[in-house]
Length: 411
Image (cartoon, rainbow, N blue to C red):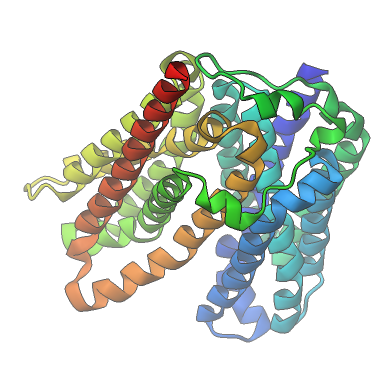
């Protein structure tokens, strides 16, 4: 049961990454066919992000009521329906309508699956699963490219991926009985609290008994710290993805083709880094993975900013940035049940997903506005501030958890 369900979850993560690059890959053609300005892509992505944030915040209540298996299957089904809807949309307003179930489905499944894996599987799987998401996100532009080059049109790319999601939905529906048969892990060094002993996560479909209201979850000591760290990390990653190539061209004089290639290597660095991190994540531990990741990102930022005659350090620094980013997201998610208990983890991971999407949605445009007044040269400094914020908040959480552990031992 353990291996079969894990295989399904791996496939699910690849499939979940597939839609995430489609809008960006196809929009240069889509906006012309739909007769709207190119800037309207931001409207679509904002609708999707808004739905994702809302469903992430509601994920704990929904998952508690229906179970993670049903929530995952229905959410992927919603995404599949939205993608098929995109494929038959002949006007911009139809895309806006289908973007609503697209975002709602994405947020719910993201929070539910991440919590289930954090509770039931080792840290290496969390890293490899998120690497699989990156693999899916890297494949979809090629599907869009094939559809456009072969004359099938952008709608065919959405239809292909929508059908893939529909097949996954069917597989998830069949697998629902398996979700409650995998026992939760107890990480080394983590004493299960008494209330958690009564409320294990291996009830049918991963359903939990006690609802943790959003207001109560936010008041748990340390939650604000990890939300801030997660916000900073996702803002850092998305800002680098959007603006690094422009920075290399405008401020470092790098050829556009070279800058684009190394910007793609940043994403490949994240994906490859997560595959590599999975081999030693269990031995190193989540805390050191987060700390090492932020410090490596800091090194990459310094290399990016070095005022040298050669551009090699800046280009290599962008790859180092990707490698440093790789373990941070999976480690933050995987450490949540350890830091806050399994009873609270679903609610807190839902809020973390909302914080993540808030950072990745709003901070890159904020930097764009700032750069209009200051110039693109400020990018390394902006990234350094986000690194410092994320590292500071995560280290303060480590201190809080350590004090809590010492108090429990003395009691």
